[in-house]
Image 1 (cartoon, rainbow, N blue to C red):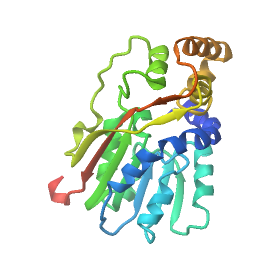
Image 2: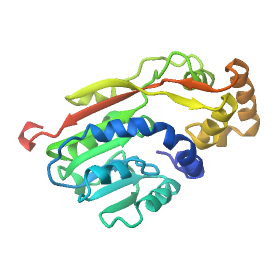
Image 3: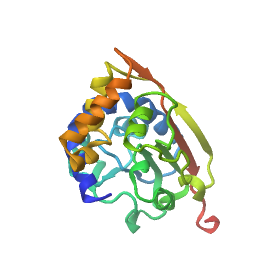
Length: 253
């Protein structure tokens, strides 16, 4: 992740926690539920953001070491607040794409929600995360694929930001043997199109673009978006990809 992108997420952190974290919770629940029974060892959460996975992990695995990693200092600060009072939980401000060698074949689980699609080399990141698993450990990852919906605010924003972008993408999970691979849909509701745009532009994935291109660009994009958006409350059902894999014995890798 570039310095500019990390800085954008620092600035977006508070708004992201307030707006998107509650709306994304069903996918977090799905990712944590996918872990099932785990062997001994720490649970690693790369690209943890504000750490919305933590409460569910503590409930399901109360006596485990849990470590969140994120490059954004603003996100990590909010994650530390969420982790306050839990002695077995720690946060690392650093690169989640290539894990420190200390985690190699040491973890009972690696779980990540909506971080993989932001990384410059998702295949390499998944390989690094998988290699952190001990035998019978579990990898559970949810991320936004290149196409999340046919019609909705996500698809309309993508069309405005990247007109003519190809729908196909290199499969990040092609490097793994998967136990589960499916698209998981849940409804998200926004009060109206203007509310969504404000959150997306300033508290979501467009923040870095908004910083780089300036207020005039954002205002022009807002006008185009609202012109084609429906009036009133807006509910859509985007699809995220959920993948899981089981760690193998060292001789099997």
